[in-house]
Image (tube, rainbow, N blue to C red; front, side):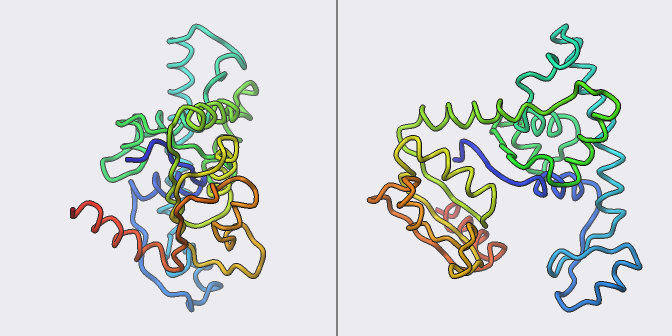
Length: 243
């Protein structure tokens, strides 16, 4: 159904963390100072214990990176920086999905179906910190972000129609519409957001604004749904799969 996913490092962080430990329901009005004193972090009305997040990722990811490095050396016979050519965030997600993914995680199904999950801001999160730490040990290690761009380019030019479901804004939304300008724009799109348009942000920008940039075709059907994605996505899914 979806040929590619563009998302944030946070998606990868929390997908891995929740495969091991639970998050909890809280409230927006909780005392953040008190939460911090108890090593509890707040994501809106979701409470994330440090033991369910940072400690998990730190204990899991570095050993997996070691395994990936060893396997790549054995499989390719390469050393140094050449070892990582072509290894972008897409391949990182597949490797993580193969090695530590669970059937209720995004990375597991991305690996199983070989669906590219492109993370243009791969360093902006806990996983990014682990990548940085790994580089302190192996100075030739790097994530080949331009390999991801090659995948996005190939998909953009090869498809007859390009449609998008965008949930929230920021870098992952922009990466989708940015690449589509090179083929004359998206052919159709749905955008779910709670961001206001009047602040001039990308998250608040309605899809009609993308027409002026050539990122959305003028005749392309599109709709912006203002609302909570955690409510709207299940409704969309139930309607789609119910039929």
